[in-house]
Length: 145
Image (cartoon, rainbow, N blue to C red):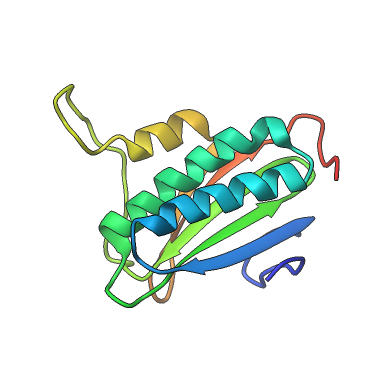
């Protein structure tokens, strides 16, 4: 679904795309690549790497903590004149993410720390079923495409 604006978003978007993925590790790579390609196609190649990293971290968190067997998770990418948003929706609303302290030896737990450091804004929205975690990157110079 491209080009239309979802009804529950608070502001109009110039560009919008949504893709649902199966809850398997390869979906993280597919989503990361798709978000990077969209960012370039929408005229912001310098932002594509950061957008891809945000997508990767949010999708990995959804896969590890928010997915149920045979239930898809959704990645929404949207662009306004001044921000690019990557939002990931998963079916487990009772498990809300929050950054945690990690030590040098911890193998996991840095995803939201990366999101918090990279994004200009991020938040968690509890939905009727599930949750949406989103992160935004400010776009210098506004909409070029």
